[in-house]
Length: 363
Image 1: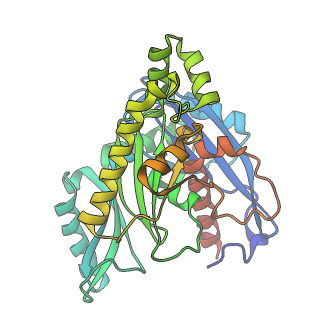
Image 2: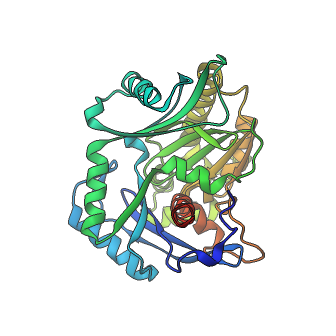
Image 3: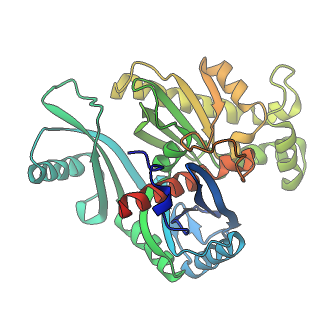
């Protein structure tokens, strides 16, 4: 269904997307102008180190304060929110089950969850949706996209949102939100894309076939490690190293200048993990015959020279993502500058879900 058919009936204050991570909170609220989508409000605010650690909320009051400060900066007034869930605490799988009636299907999926997730059912929240495209070689089976998240993590996020006076309409993993932001709604059903979220604390790999996320994994390697390496190699403070990374990126891999020599081992580590993940997805899971292209997002995606270097080493098309790929912006220029928008990919995807939810809710 095209959600832009009846924009006149949409409320003025749409639910906003909230991306809550270890070091920051980002919010995006979308709006409509005729049949075109636009960014109504957005902002980001820091989360003090230690308040959230590896996706676990340690100081609810401190996180609440960051959320409220971010909302104040954005001037978002609605209390309805779609919030992210940490990828490191989530499990996304495509499972195969026989074609069954709904009650039997739920029981079959329950068994699959127990078999595929290394946690007890009493420790999980999980949800699922049938896929139009089947990955099964058995014509008697259907493919189901299943997402499970540790119950304690979900409850703690819900608790801090309630503490901030917000009404949680929905929650989603970072990977699903990013796919909904970065991949166009109409895509080649056979195209396989690897989304690499190169963040400040970790890097996440999400494989999507025909626009459907199929598998995710994450590693502790991060953009911050590049800053640390530059600071150590050039003997400069962190602030100056961050500035150098912003201005020079990975340096010159042709001349092998000091900046590149400083980050080379991190680049090699990243390349090895990407290649291993692609080999597993194609050769192990067999969801696709190959990976067609790689999309970069997250703050680290802005690192100068990174797409070119990765492309040469991987032998793949590597490009920075377009966070507006799914949205009909018309001729309008997005309010969020492009480099900043890559950091907002998750929040934009969540805001897009809020737009869809609102339309379906009033239809």
